[in-house]
Amino acid sequence: MNNTFSNSSQIGTVSTFSELVNTDFKGERNALCWCRNLEGDFKEIVDQLQLTENITEVVPEDLLALQLSENGNRAREIILNDFRLLTDFGASPSLNVLKCYDRDDEFDFISTDVYSFHVDRSPIATDTFLCTYYGAATDIIPNEQAEQKVLIPEIQKKLAALHNGPSEEFEDFLKEHYFDLDYQPQPYSVPVSIGLGHLWRLAVDISLTL
Image 1 (cartoon, one colour):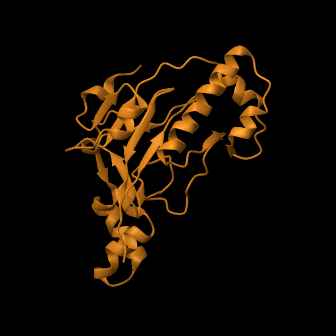
Image 2: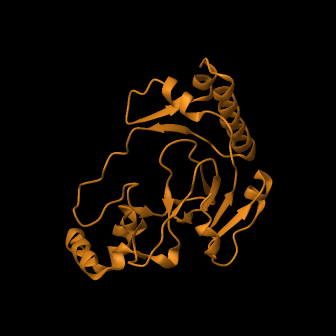
Image 3: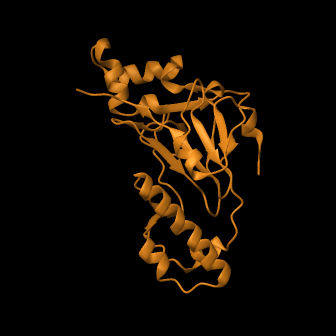
């Protein structure tokens, strides 16, 4: 496992699911990793699934319908157990097989797609749980190594021109279109791969509305 994240004060590690969901975020810490070395053939599952879209959601019934080898079945049981753990906790897990994500190319100076570093936002207190079982894993980056794009002068100027409204409504405009969630890595930044098999819990920005 890549342990570069262990040097960041924002990322912590745990050894059980109970620790993952019950450990409070304190101070700068906003990410927790349940480090796991999973056994099983996850590629076999991917190879057997019928992929019709760039993003195909797979439900437990789809997994149960597959005829798998012993190693494939071991991988399936791991995924199904993660489903049970998260569902019993009160989360709404979903399993996706990705060919690729669609790109947001509406603007050439800022994007809000998953190819950029960004934070999630929710109107209620919640967290994001994330795990890659097979394929290319997601990268995350510590806050201190990234800059909010709306604070970069040249981008802010273009967004202000796009807004073309009262200055007191500019911040609401940024939030409404999710521009304020996008971040740019600093030149010295070192992105962290979430790795394969590890289950992560990431803090979510809370946006309260009346």
